[in-house]
Image 1 (tube, helix red, strand yellow):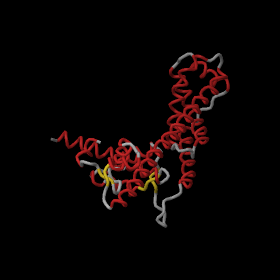
Image 2 (image 1 turned 45 degrees about the horizontal axis):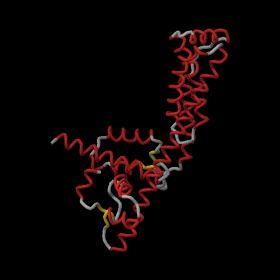
Image 3 (image 1 turned 90 degrees about the vertical axis):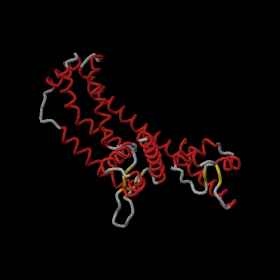
Length: 264
């Protein structure tokens, strides 16, 4: 019994999360903390669980909006100075007081090229501030600064282990920075495709909701999936997917059998 209840909770959580993402998509990839908390209210999540939800949404490029004095959410562009501050704070935190002459720097690179782990770790430390500088080039494109830095740091960590393929130390910085930039570009590209996919979901839900509303208005009652599919030519699968993504809250539309909701 407990296992069944847990499975039901997981299904409800997944549906609610999909509903919140769809709502955020209709609000330019933004949702207020109050809207998110209200959506999950019936699941009685703890504060720690809600924080995990917010973290998940932010990692999927959904901003958790803050209310301004007028009650309107801040414009996403208002967040750009905060992103710049975040990048600058990170850059300062990883700055090293270590000063290397050109000869010492070359020696570290050559040792890293030879596969020495200590030299590779030292080289990572020397280039970490550059990751924050590169991240500035990609802010405002749908990826959070900390995610850009994370992708860049990962690329840097991998890159220092691949320097053995180079012929001389002068090529190291160019190779590492290219890997960092490529990683950030991939993150921005993936973010764009994710937003495009989410927007398609929102459009599909809106289309089904609009058609269901029109038909329900004509018949003066709720309509079923079969009726809507027959009248509009929209496939049952598309309609059922839209219902699931909306948390089964499309006005004027119902399943033939309420028990079907459990299997969708």
